[in-house]
Structure formats: C-alpha cells, structure tokens
Length: 108
Image 1 (cartoon, one colour):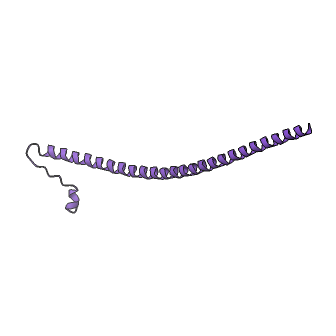
Image 2 (cartoon, rainbow, N blue to C red; image 1 turned 90 degrees about the vertical axis):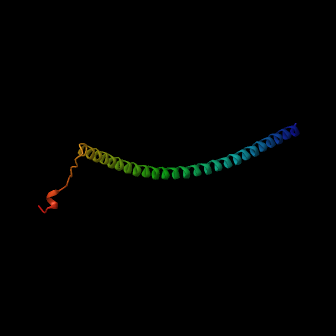
Image 3 (cartoon, rainbow, N blue to C red; image 1 turned 135 degrees about the vertical axis):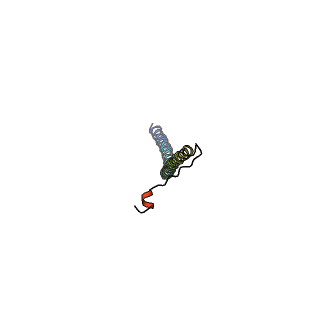
C-alpha cells in the first residue's frame, strides 16, 4: 500500500508541476500582452498630444482667417456705401465734389 500511496503522491506532484508550468506560461503570455498594450497606449498618447497641438494651430489659423474675413466684410460695406453715395451724387448728371477737412487744406 505504501507503493500505491507514493505513486499517488508522485502523480499529484507531477500534476501540480504541470499546472505550475501552465500558469507560468500564461503569466509570460499575459506579461507580453501587457507590454504590447503599454506600447500601444504610449503611442496613442503621443498621437493625441500631436493632434492637440495641431488642433491648437488650426484654431489659431481659423481665428486669423475669421479676423481677416471680418475686416474684408467691413471694407466691402464701406465700398458699397461709397458706391451708393457716388450713385446718388451723380444721379441727376451733376457732380458734387466732397472735400474732406476743407479747413485744414486752406490752413484754417
């Protein structure tokens, strides 16, 4: 009976050793996957930072363009008003000269 008991213990030990080897292999696989995921996370984090910088630059450029567009629209309104003034001033065929700051021109 002692031989059978010893064989049973040896079998259990072998089974436990196999399970430990399997667990160690699984741990190695999980560590490899963890490293891969960490590398992916770092790459994605760098890409997000780059996108944030690009977005900020794009927003700055858009704001500058909007400012230029607003200035152009103001200039266009002024030109339209001058055209309307010119049209009404010459509608009857006579020309009306508008001299700005007449007093300055004559030294007054």
